[in-house]
Length: 151
Ligand SMILES: CC(C)(COP(=O)(O)OP(=O)(O)OC[C@H]1O[C@@H](n2cnc3c(N)ncnc32)[C@H](O)[C@@H]1OP(=O)(O)O)[C@@H](O)C(=O)NCCC(=O)NCCS
Image (cartoon, rainbow, N blue to C red; front, side, top):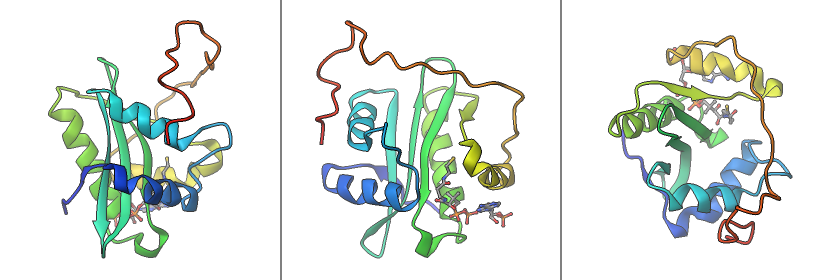
């Protein structure tokens, strides 16, 4: 199954709605900002797939010069368990492999741990790591162009 393409301006509202339906958005993350930031870099993208004229699946893929990462893997609940999730991950892997990436990491929120079965069905393994993070929103070097206003 193929048919994934880069997100276009006209897709954004549908994509955000899909992420909300799939419970992937959080109050502290602005999805419009995430989309704008991923689209501005050559090292990241958001791939979408339409079905019956609607956005049915998405995946954000990117790399930092070391590893590839997937985010926002989402399939419309109306068409889940039909192979679209697998196809999204495979499309993202192909996008990364074309750019020389040979290892892909991704995070699963602990409250969504059951979804790890999906990734394991696709050959992903649970790695014994602790994920740490820190927001640097107030860093003076952060460009104002990457603001939460990007809708
Ligand atoms: C997770 C998600 C993307 C899977 O999409 P999907 O289109 O239903 O998955 P597929 O039909 O491609 O399934 C691929 C394989 O994973 C398995 N699978 C799918 N969802 C699963 C789940 N929740 N738990 C365990 N296995 C699952 C399928 O049985 C299938 O295995 P098989 O090929 O051996 O039969 C979809 O359920 C979704 O959008 N969930 C909400 C958002 C989410 O949690 N995203 C992941 C964030 S980390």
